[in-house]
Image (cartoon, rainbow, N blue to C red; front, side):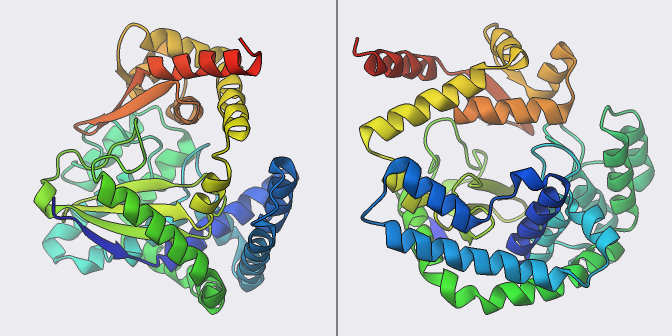
Length: 370
């Protein structure tokens, strides 16, 4: 199967993601944890010895990156910084991150003929809607129809306002975000030589996974562009310093031009390799499963899925929860391996994953020596 794989340094999106982390830490300073601190805790928790020095050096390099980006952002208009780089909902990327990705890929209105720009503006605004798995959000023919649909949606008021404003002033807002990103992104590029070895290793690991299984490089339960002809399959792999701990591995399917954009934490595979010993993997499986089950709403979601597959909007309507809350719960259940997700048209369809429950039972039996 012919597959094209390219290395892509998405500095703008990565810088935007780091700024989003910084904005989160401003609001919740108790959650602030720079990469160096994470590395030290990781080494102590999992008794890492052989790779200890290497991981500490990587943590120090990432710390310098975060500090450089934070310093470069100090003199920027703080109200704009917070408005564009604070996520609109839990588990959702910020407006600045979404726009940075489109700017880097030259998918902004000015990159298209004038007659296509209104539709591109609506698609851009739909890009920031939380858990956008409802068909049609990016297919409205004009601003008025998109605005009318927004007004009748159940999105939070601030989400509606930002999406409407972005559809109306797309290029103006993108230009402002690009201006805000200029200095922090320049600071990022100055640290690139330190991060490049980790980026290269991350790229090679992901490249091997894609080559081995282009339809499902992340493993069972993930999907990539199921409606794209195999002969047109192109992957852009973007090692990311913003998702350095591996928890931020994600993919984006882009149209037109059958391309999958894969963001992979620059330490992801190194850390995952270290966690492959039996006892560590056992504790990780059990802790993820316990966390996923320790919530009444998530148990209700599992009970609902027992009747059959459901998409996010159906779960939201059935349980009376917002789209953002459903998205948060589904991420935890996916991480625990208790559910699977499949793309059906424009929707994300969730199902129970019996083998995830079976694994949890086996892990408990192993823990108690049964």
